[in-house]
Amino acid sequence: MSSMNRIVVRAAAVACILCSASVSRGDAELWQTNFEAAKTKTKAKAEHKMLLVEFSGSDWCPWCKKLKTEVYDKESFKAEARKGFILVNLDYPKQNHQPAELKRQNSELLKQYRVDTYPTLFVMDAKGQPIGKTFYHSGGPEDYLKEFTGFVNTHKDIVAMKKKLEHVGGLDRAKLLDEIVMNYEQLGVENDDVPKYCAEIIALDPENKAGLKFKYKFRALMAEANALSGEKNFDAARAAYEKAADLPGVKGKRKQEAWFAEAECCASALQFRRAVACLNKAREAAPEGPKAADIAEAVKRYAPLAETQQAIADLTAELASAEGPARARALDRLVDAQVKFGQLAPAERRPEEIEKRSNEIIELDPDNKAGLQTKYRLRELLIDAAKDFKAGETEKARKALNEARALPGLTDEQQAKAQEAAQKLQKRKGE
Image (tube, rainbow, N blue to C red; front, side, top):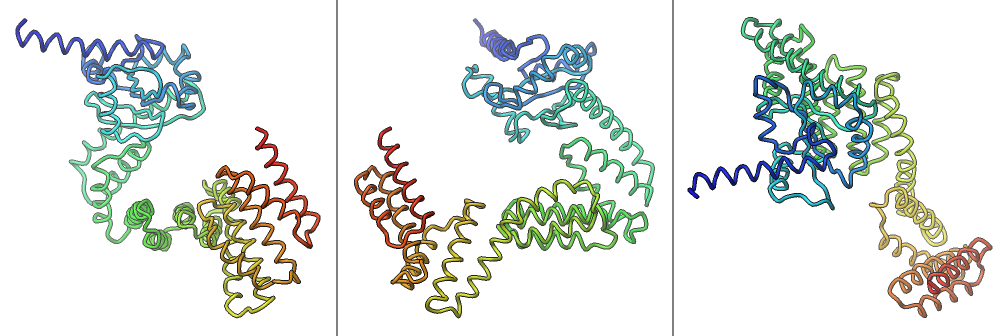
């Protein structure tokens, strides 16, 4: 066999491997797996369709399974989708076997299109250029088909508007560019032209006569702030969000957007008091705005953390001048607040700091006059018992629990806590 024949046979074999894998999708005629072959098919005059490309985790992703059941398996979807699209499934299973060639292709495409969420669905042109992106949502076949068709129509509108750019200038060009950018936003995909268009719009409306200069300065600041927040440069991000909110002409929904984003940034930085303050500003900016429900939910989530964080700050300040029994009581309240904060925000648990303060409390109340000696000895012994049991030192754990139950001055609640720990140990020992 000649080298040319071997290449042809090899290419045919690879194509067979890639295409045959589509059988596992459940509809071999509807879904393809060979991406390059699908692109070629869209260019054929008989087809002339867009690509509908799904990145999925078929055997582990619950949303992918729901999408298949609720949308892809419906006859209405099968009948309508094939009219306008060549469907491609790029799957990333954890258990099901995939041929090596298919796995290699899918891995490369995952990186190329920077997919990190499953399922992700793209509508693409014949060159594989994304023109629209979406994810799982409720609504069934009709909603998805309407969304995919909307992507195609919006893309056509953008192409038509770009042709008009050749014949307009000044504010008319700025307004047309604004319309193009707004249409790109509906598609959910990044486009290399958008940053260039945004900068041009600002230059074309230097006095904000069309209201576009500050609109696009706001967009630029928000993009900068989001990038800084993603890099965990939270202080710089907060400054950019506030600058965006304070721009002339920015009010209502836009101002709400900036304050809400800053609140999430503050929460990521564990600055919950600042987060709640920003949420309140976001609510004031547009009480009936689109983020009203999100703001209410975020306040509900962050307010307890903010209150506990404030208590920790107040008690820490109080400790600076407290001595003797007063210091012991302040330390007690501080430890309780830190424990609560650690329960609300597990990443902020500080066992070493709590242990250090607990030991100081024990030293400050040697005769248990404030009831703190017993409280913290009990806590210490229960922690030791849990550690010993986890390390396989069952006898040491039992002795620690016996010592805990024998502590003088135990309240009924403390006795119950020690007894409960002993019963758990006994039960786990029996298992």
